[in-house]
Length: 192
Ligand SMILES: [Fe+2]
Ligand SMILES: [Fe+2]
Image (cartoon, rainbow, N blue to C red):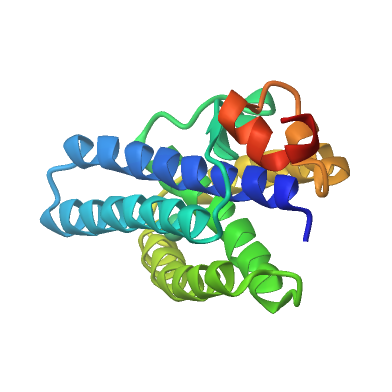
């Protein structure tokens, strides 16, 4: 396993989970519905916990922390306007989490995935089932949901096509983040 790519990947996941938590957390103040307040608060807390788990895995694998400037989600905003309303945020979340779920299942099954990361993937795959389930259930009764889902689905495919060439060289994604000096020393000891 390429340690540099792993450090960038897990750092990117750590930051993207945190971005998801912040987005969902901001939505709590936009609803007066007690059920939605409960679901959004829990969803937000679980995404924040996922970010914490990645931070733990990064330490356990003795990988350097990479400063990530752009979450995975931010790439969608080049292809469509940022989700603003509660409906848009939950349509975006649904499409994004479908991708995450499939992706994590593949990563957990990959023999090259280190054990600590596999454990984290398996835990998140379980949480994701509930995230996908409650959001889909809510969207089913929302006028305009189908058109909104289609909009984010189109962006999702564009993001997937855009990022595919970087699968094994995440550090080359333009403006994604920065290796600190300490990280560079740890990842390229020969140049240290
Ligand atoms: Fe998550
Ligand atoms: Fe999730």
